[in-house]
Length: 70
Image 1 (spheres, helix red, strand yellow):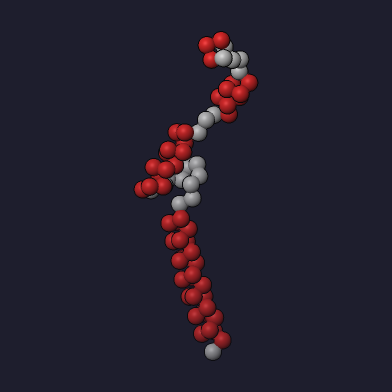
Image 2 (tube, rainbow, N blue to C red; image 1 turned 30 degrees about the vertical axis):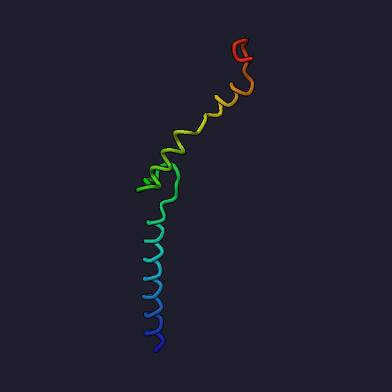
């Protein structure tokens, strides 16, 4: 019957939704506020540590070269 097929389709969609939710939870995109696990968290920490702040880049590029560095 039509109600049976609708019920089956709803169950199928619920299963797909739960599967997609689990995949999304496991994906762990590297962005602020997201806790990463394992190697991803170590890599994220390393990248954060080596990022040069924009102000420091400006100082290095536009700063005066003193005699001992010339």
